[in-house]
Length: 211
Image 1 (cartoon, rainbow, N blue to C red):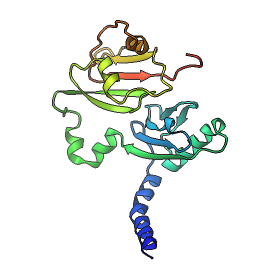
Image 2: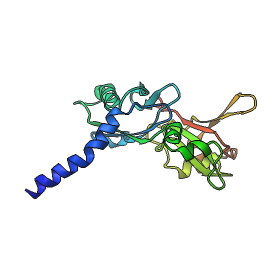
Image 3: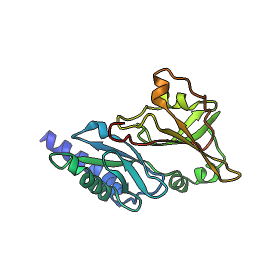
């Protein structure tokens, strides 16, 4: 009897959360949490890119923006299915709303978000085969190598020879791409010390076969 009552109580408590997740439409800038029961190495944070897609190992890109969580879960499970003997068990949850949505929900944040910075930190972005995708606050003076070493690391699918740092000049709008061979640096090779700047994007592509 006690277990039954406990189960009913948990169901009542979790129902509003489940309804909210199912009603919410995913937006660019959201960070999602994905778990695959059959292969935990696929578990990761997924940043919804400006074009509305998320990038997955073994699959490539999947459209996320405009869908609810359940719709995206089904799409990802279907895309991953050819890599498993039986349909994989996939769970998706919204880990972090995009900053604009958060600001709208918080009047104070909406007023000050564009001006406030945390202490001596800057905001950079990580996407691709990194353990933690999304916006990351780092101390000023942090180098790219320090960032890669201290923010959760890379996934086993990462092309460590082809790490990219993308930097956009705010005045001209021109983007500069710095290629960084993280694998060689780990093996002892020398490399330029690249200090991160506000708005930098660190992109780690998925490695190719036999790479």
